[in-house]
Length: 391
Image 1 (cartoon, rainbow, N blue to C red):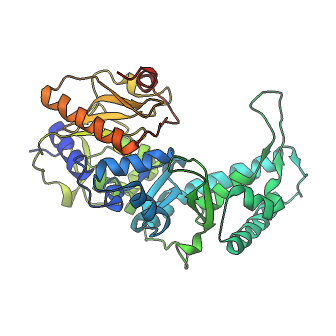
Image 2: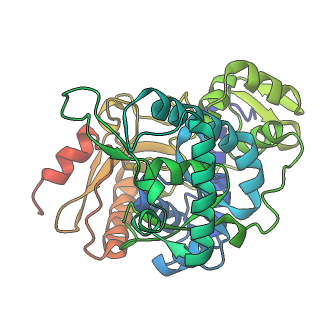
Image 3: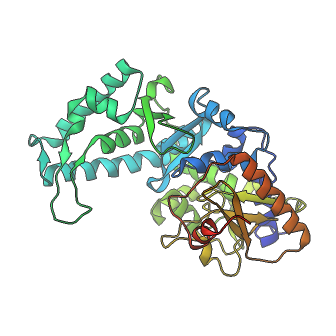
């Protein structure tokens, strides 16, 4: 059986991405998709708990903030991810450093060309690097600190970019967040516990040396290693899939793939040692959160989407919460203000599917315990379901 067939791709997806809820622990859940999307902090927890039904919120937090077996970092496509510690070197050197270089250029340009308060010296790049040194010293002294605490300890972080126009969105902005994000992307700082609950979007910072005393080691050809790790989780995949997921130009993508031993199927590339078909498992249901790593893992997604998938996406192509059955998306879901979960199926797959989806809906509702989760990028279906009344 061709591993590039739709049946095989769906079977591999279910088994490898633990859509049966059978991951051993939070790290195994993350490892299955190489890295968890973390633009919405709630996505990290819900992605893990869907794949590992024996895990709790505390287990995820333990892996993130105590064991450090999961690390929150900006990487592919300038997107936040939670990455298993073993994959950090590949992700950092294969993607994060390119993002960091872009962030630094943009920030220096903004500080050089725009009005600031106070005015900066002519050597903006030198000023910024000196400021970063002060931040590193402050973090070492404080141990763990929020952006506000660091801005209090390092006055330079309160330097503001001033408005250039009268537009409402063009406001005075301190450089605090931009500098801290840049330093995090360069591997000098690392995000720590949130300021609030597991759904909070604000995190404290600590020195990266607490995780990597000797720095983040470079794993040889990092781009080839990242492409290999991606195909291990998402293959078969096309060049376009790899380029989209990594955020690389097509030329960089082709060079990385050329370094690998791959087999080409009707659906794209798969690693040569991973081209054996898998036994399709019995269909199971899963409710994955918005921006989950599985539906966001490919650019070309028609093979697992319903005929009309428009209600599941926002205008920028971000996917909302999805209902899965047997390796395909059959609907969507949302959390109402009272914490109840509403589901709508977009494809008919029989009574067994309906009953399994309902069981997962009930399980998710209990897992949430009344917490209302609203995605950063609401989709038409998610908005509609969230507005419905509890039956």
